[in-house]
Length: 572
Image (cartoon, rainbow, N blue to C red; front, side, top):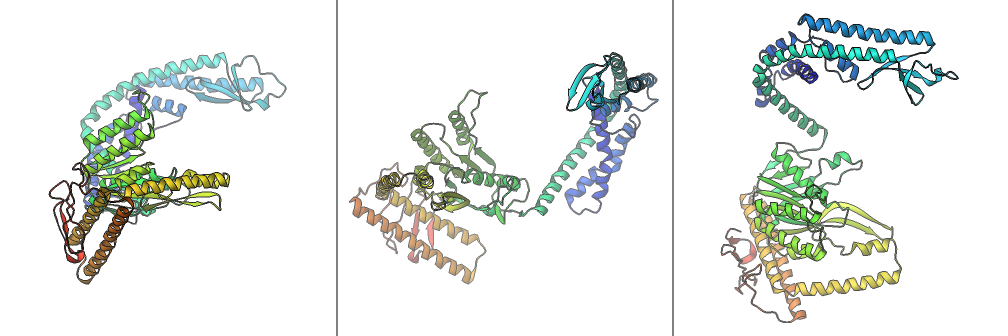
């Protein structure tokens, strides 16, 4: 019953606050603001306010303190609405006055300075300072004594009897008030549709004003809606407001040829913050909000998937790994080319070998989905293997390791390529430091293992062919973007020359690496298994001496004309 009184009082305050909003929106030019103002018109609200004022006292406001809240429930309904209610309130008033009179008499008779307090459990009780007693003993008339930090709280039998009388009177008042309140609620229900539209309008206004305040107080920018995701100096909108130090911004760029981004780096380097920042900015863009960046271009996406939690699900009785697999399976079943997904540390919940195998299989499936994926991982092998596939790019969070200073400085800055430092454990061991002989031996073993793996990877003909195909597809994407871009005349010509020069340099480097690998590893079988990432690579001569690569799909055919300045290609 008391909740019904609270709801009507809150509705009363809500209705009163609508008129200032209507007046503040006078002169607004935005169609949305004008529509909000129309929903807040006084002609729509005054009937509701008239009904409330006919039953509720005009000076009644919502209270929070226990005693004020009880008095509010008692005196909310106007006098004269119900005769029985007026009688019950008189009994409540007299019982409350008796309590105050009793406390004054106790103070005078015992020579003590007594203060009356109230809480919902004990109702009225007495409080006095322990210093007022000094060497005296508290008179036996006081019971239920509690000592708290220099104060004494107590009651008397007469006070408890009066408290019970007040409670009975209050319950009678609330019961009688509820009848008038329920009749009022029945009448207000006829205006529910109007109040609902007003509530929706004010909620929209609150959101817009919050966005405007954030944009004017922070360095946010309006994102453009394009087919390319490009963000310059993007920031995590929550972390930058929480941490005391200045947030380090990062750039983001994703197209179909850079749709799967593998993020590596040591612990605490900022991988999770980086991938979460791009997901949050994608959400902010599609709700019509500015984003924390210097420049932002975002595509419209239908779905956003996130696999970032490492918590066990106790309620479902599943481990961390089982939870990972369940969420990964959901993503694989529902992801499409119109999706964005962020995956953080997939495969950590099981053994290293099994975790790498599963993470690699899931990564390959996500690449085939053609969605924009940010895949943070500690598996360096995954970055190497996936880095040779078309559409995959390797990035890492940079770390400044200074052995002479005895520290590792996290730069929180994104950089191209997989993480450069293979063994952060060795770097930390040098910082500790371990004995020099142990460090030298560990470095020698690490170097030999690295050289062995590199020789095996470089000698693979399949890897070389995939690198060529990937370079050709990247060239194709650049040319398509230039065709639909704003560059013209000399600017376009200079850009094409630079693109040609860069392409020749990179393709020559691939050919040189392949030749060097063949000298070291010997001749390699020319035929590649049909199930590999490149079905065939025919030795068809072109103007530059490179090979024209053909993928699994007949449409994935790219030929480079003389000078590398143009391409003819099917859809990738």
